[in-house]
Structure formats: structure tokens, C-alpha cells
Image (cartoon, rainbow, N blue to C red; front, side, top):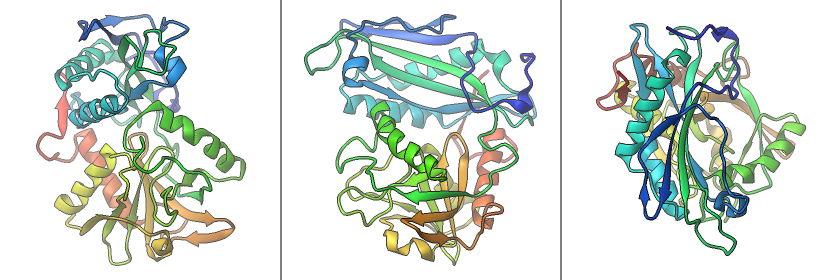
Length: 342
């Protein structure tokens, strides 16, 4: 059974499902997980999350296959990244076993919210941890809450993923050796102003260069870059100062490229000056899988990729189709990539 929803017209936006999973951290330990139908959070006005932005989060999806099975894609990597993020912000980590238990509990409880196969919609899952206890001195909060919520979302691009135009930002996304490699709310807050500038100027996103030298490509406000060379090699940027988020989608695409499609792959520093030499460019992340980039505006100078502005380039299209096929169960997945919720 599924909810009576116009699945084909869903946007990528918040719609409260029936249940969410919660747990609290107090006196040095996590409580048992529990389901609640209350979407409201009750915290102190002096909570660590409000005073010092002590919060980390994740994003993943659940899919309904043509056979009616319910799949999630590599959730163990989300669990580990949440642990890494929590450790960096002195937040008590949620163990992987607890994360997976919460995932199963949440999706089963909200099974009617999982869109039907072929609708183009999915169930988006957002786990997060935040400092809920009061703190006024600069210090970690004394108490925390872990929540995992979900919502049905439509495809990130209605009518297909048309190439976008982005700009090179004059602002920095993350400091060298800072928090750029974790999924913390503060990183995304940092990108909002630059994002508003880009949108006001008619661009879809920003390209951020490394903050130290501004010579190397890093990422956008919420996605990793993927480039295709003219001889078909798949290249993703590597950071000198470990300030790029380890995207689950990007890591998966690189394996798909090498092991399934037989393409040559390389993760390395990508100098901005070599970007015009690439044949294709895309932004990869959970929401859209791959957003093709047609043009990059560098302070009025335009970099146009040979793949054009009409559709995805051929190699990025193969990567997109293969990864989404794996996620939807139409293509056999590498071992351990699919966690079925029964």
C-alpha cells in the first residue's frame, strides 16, 4: 500500500511523513531508539546547536523496485560519515549498528510513503545529531538528540537533467584543514550567501576553488565535481588540505566507471587552468545523482564544454544510467551496495 499522493508532481521539498526515529544522549550513553509521530523538536533556548552550531547530518534514499522490494543504497557509508562528522565536532557518535537499526525502523514505519517504482520519486532520509543541552561557555553541549526523518521527494530535475551554468565564486567554501570534509550544518550555512549571489546573477551553483591558493577545483556548495577528459577518463578532484566532502555518490560513480563500464579513473588535484580541456563536467550528490554542467563563468570569461547545453554528455549519461539502475534494482549491484529493508 502507498499513500494517495500525486507522485509524479512531487517537488524536492519537505513533506512530513507519519513517523521519525529519535534517541537522546545523556549521562554518557545513548537511549533506546523510539518512534514518534511528533515532528516538533523541543530544546533549550541555550542548546548547543543554537549557540555554537553543533550539528551534523546525512542524506540518503530508499527506493521501491519493480518487484516491490525496498532498497537503500550503501547506508553503511552514510553511517560511517556521520561518525566521522560527529567526532570532528565533539558530538557523541551514533554507532553504525544503531544507525542501521534506526534506518530499518524508520522506513518500515513509513512504508506507505515510499513512492511506487517508475514514478520518478523516492523516499529521502535525513539522519542528524544536534546539541540539545544548554551551554553558554564555548564548549560541547552536555546532551544530544539523534533523529532520523524521511519524506517523499520528486526527481531533482523535472523533465530531465538539463545542463546548468555555474560560476567561479570569489568566496571560500571551507578553510584548509577545517571542516570541509565532514557533513556539518555550519558548512552549508557558509555556502548560502555565495549561493544567493550566484542565483541573483543567473547561475545555478558555484565552483569553489581551494582557499589556500585558489588554483585547484574543490567542490560546490553541496556536491562533488566529476570531469571527463577528451579521451574518456573519469577524473575527480582531490584536495591538498582534505577539505572536500567524501561524497557517497562520487565514490560509487568512480567504482561504476572503473569496474562496470571499464573506464580509466583518476582522483587527483585538478588545476582550474585545465578545466577548459575537459570534455564533460558534472556535479554529483544524493539528490540529483549527477547534474550536468554545460558552462562555467569565470568572471565574465565563459568555459563551454563540448557536451553542450542540451543534454548530458555521453559518458556522464552512462554513469548516471548505470548508478540509478543499481539503486532501482534493474542492474546488478556490487556486493554490499544494497541494503534491503524487509
